[in-house]
Image (cartoon, rainbow, N blue to C red; front, side, top):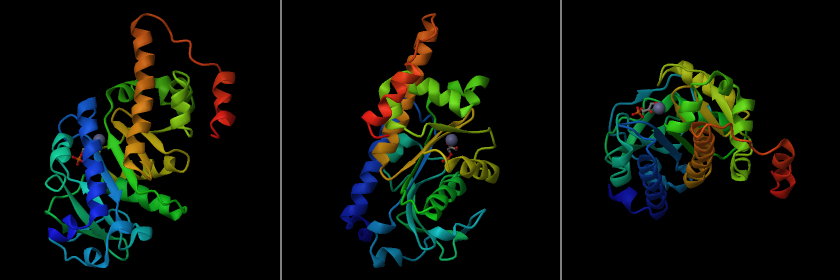
Length: 266
Ligand code: 13P
Ligand code: ZN
């Protein structure tokens, strides 16, 4: 659709989404259709884009998202593969508009691609963050093998213990993910239960681990969200490599970790 293609800011953002989709695939975090992305592009859309007619039947949401009335998002499609989102973002995702009352959404461009099954989690996360005054635009969900692996070990289903372990592997982990990582107990993918459990944790963290399923990062920039997950994944790999080599990694001490706080304004 010309009107979207002519909007340089939206196309730049969609190209960045495609870039990250490619990273998710090459990282091995996006088997088949694993993972999904939503990005709020309302601030980039002009009035003509905001007024585009629906190109598919209106879809109800499981829970109202009143802070997102009229907002426009790029969302990856359900069942779509990240390696193809990278090549053709508009054949593997769509632009949607939330209704004014926040109870439903319409697909408005470019193709009638049905959004991810996690649409309720994504929009409820965007809605919650707006409700507390944050201008967060990105929710990135992916399936990093190493971090999911850690969620199969009971002691790591404690957020404090998991965060401390990952932070202590390399200084970057605490610098890049200063709030640490929250844990969301296992729920059925795509369910409202998963969405509600996710929102509960979002008050404290910008990165969440869905037990035995995947990871989510929220932020203002999709590259930063990718980097945050990549850094924690790196820490998980250092931990597992040490264990596989037969030793428990020493980790940084509390003093060494705390010294990062003033040094990097955390
Ligand atoms: P979708 O293909 O519907 O986005 O589902 C993938 C996924 O990762 C579910 O959590
Ligand atoms: Zn998933």
